[in-house]
Amino acid sequence: MEKKIKIINACDTNCPVKKSLNILSGKWTMMILYQINTRTIRYGELKRAVVGISEKMLIQELNSLVEHNLVSKKAYPEIPPRVEYKLTELGLKTLPIIDQIAAFGLENLV
Amino acid sequence: MEKKIKIINACDTNCPVKKSLNILSGKWTMMILYQINTRTIRYGELKRAVVGISEKMLIQELNSLVEHNLVSKKAYPEIPPRVEYKLTELGLKTLPIIDQIAAFGLENLV
DNA sequence: AATATTTCTAACCATTAAGTAAGTACCCAA
DNA sequence: TTGGGTACTTACTTAATGGTTAGAAATATT
Image (tube, rainbow over the protein chains, first blue to last red):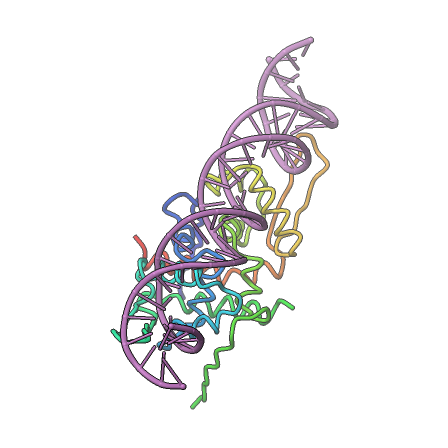
């Protein structure tokens, strides 16, 4: 049998929850990750998927996600432009979080 | 074999992720839930556990969590006052989310 | 009579996040 | 030459969040 001791550390700067939230908090962040999910998606598509987000916020969020290495971006030198986004290996690792959040909402919230 | 089709709906007002985040987003919210966890904890204890939070924010968050029925509060009519907080049944259901967030931070973030 | 304890409130200010609206760039098609 | 399509960018405004300080309440202790 496995011995499982739950030690709760104080939430200082090393708190793993705090470190994750530094990257993942924000009104739109997780919804964008949720929408990208396992697919490759163009900017315009994503904009339609995340209902209500402004162009400014979407790009701002995407840039931040790319910076944090959760999302990768590929721009094709075409006219009109085409830019594709998808989750990186690290970004894919956030999906279990988002699945839990979705499940919680689905099961418990009106 | 299980047939698993992943349908991704647009994130409008009915999006379960959005509904969950309405309650759970915020700089301190999840860290407070993380600290309360499965224990019963006094206000002062919690304040020490969530390093860096101000009294105003802590009470504001706790009130909001009580309002949303994630946390229950029991005040003893003593002097000096003693108030205990713990997660409700609904609040306990957020722990899987927070465990995922903690695990993500632990495994992937410096 | 002054001080400590604990939880919580209120007023005020600073900072940050988010929203709005307009504009840019490039080429193609009409 | 006007307009359409796509992916941004910029400047500005407003809303949300967070921080600071002071204080209240009631009793026990010094």
